[in-house]
Image (tube, rainbow, N blue to C red; front, side, top):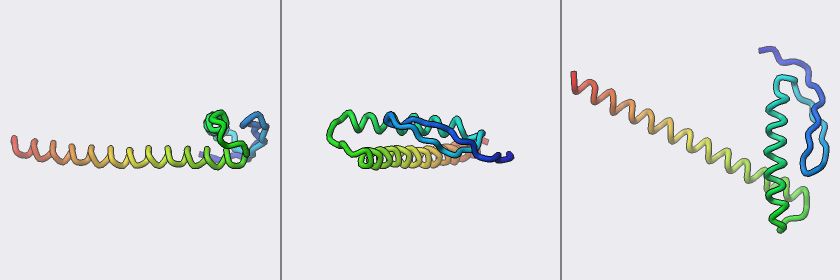
Length: 97
């Protein structure tokens, strides 16, 4: 797939506009990411214990990274479980022949 020159894409996070250089084929992903970040930052802001935008951004980044790592671990565990099931099925099938 050919990567094209980046275009400026405007996203809004916590009511502030940001212009981000982004290849056209990645614009949808960028907008989705900005929406998720905005959502997470608003959740943290609405809790009321953190007021600095910078600290809110750091907490959002930590929360999103944690969620990503958890999903990654779950994915690895799922692959391992499926692999073990395949081995058991193969063993069962070889015993029934």
